[in-house]
Image (cartoon, rainbow, N blue to C red; front, side, top):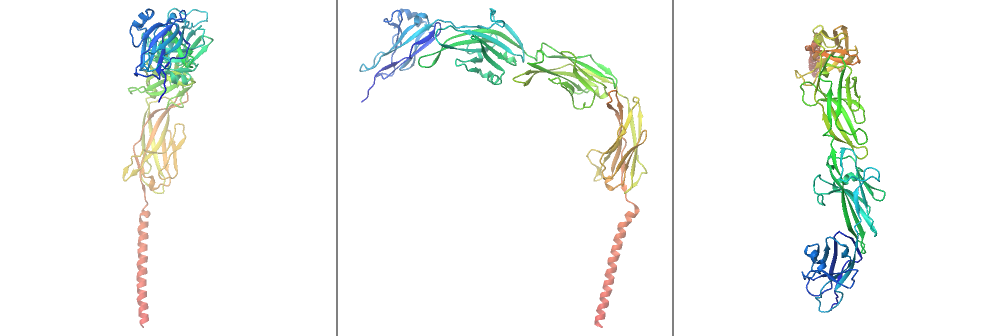
Length: 591
């Protein structure tokens, strides 16, 4: 045996909703007999006539509605929607003040006995719409906001700040949730097209939309409440994708008697149309003063001007400027000469260390490169490279744009120095244990006054009768300042290098050994000292090969055969003497 009773369940009341908004009231039945699909009838008891039931809508009879609801039911503004066989929901699309009252959900009996309840009632109270949302004026609080949304332009990397006023005077205890959203310019605004940026929920938690969650966590996106009704959103490090139309949406929430929270009102206001001016579209670089032709040792000055509608360097943006040089006819931008980084610290590129080169900022956006003493190797095509950075959270910099100037040709006259070198081995033949002297005579044509010469000696070692592929090895030399530089001698013995005449150098290899065999050459170079005391190599040459082969002395060639012959004679004599002695002793024993 079993025991059951029909029970109709509706939400616990009273329910508070706002005029002009949509409302849904659920109803379901349990403990019934009969078919699984039950019918439902909805009635309204207004406060001014609490005993009069007004038929709203029914799942069974399409003509059930009273005249006060007929037109709204036909228009679909009021309808009953079946969730399953024993559950429905009453939906009113646009709540009116006269919709307040007690709503009854009645289920016609399908039971064999009349047990339990056949209807449930819930009170609905309609609140006036007092929610207000508007764009916060950028000026003082008392200033009126403009009638149409303003158009704002921010530079990439700058902060985008927008304000919103949201208030309500509902007599009941409600919470406001305020969110800022962005839509593509000229696109219709709706839940499907409005991308949430950040919002304060009804429980005061701050959350960001999916594309902005990382920026919120990094501190680049902030949302705060100022006073009782003012909300301010700050987007740090504006990006190109931040352009669009920004809206403020305020939603009013109330807690129902069952403890759940329900949204009872929502309004939206357009804050501004925002354009983000990217640095890549604004950054431009020009150079001057034009093609340059200078002589060696003269100063070279080049100017670089960075232009465009750019934010000033500082909190949100930073810039670096450098010069690049490519030899004439070489592809690409070339190698770095000098640069100023985002902190204003200068540095020289590879190969320019030790030279007097200055990179400085001479005006707000003008930079100067100065080479105190130009060299023929400085001739080529120069370009100025500017990079713009935006500052993210903390001190992190992100490169946003870069631009190169047009090529600027620079011509530096050659020194016109021609060198020739002749090297030879003094005496022509050397023997092991002796000292080999190699001489190098240098001839010079052209060049400026004060030209100095340097010479170095190099050797290539033979392997299996052929010169090895290993690069030549420095043996020693004398620099342009007269200071000797010693390398590594193949035989490992002592080496001396010296200047024996104004243009004559000598290399001496003491105690020559077989390991010193090789092909030697002399490599002279001409040097010029400029006004900044830096040295520049104005020319170089290479002498012909000089073969050094340490011969052995004649006595050295006879020493080995003599030793061999003496040894053989001693062994033979000992053998003969031993044989004779042995035979004599045998005959002596027989006797």
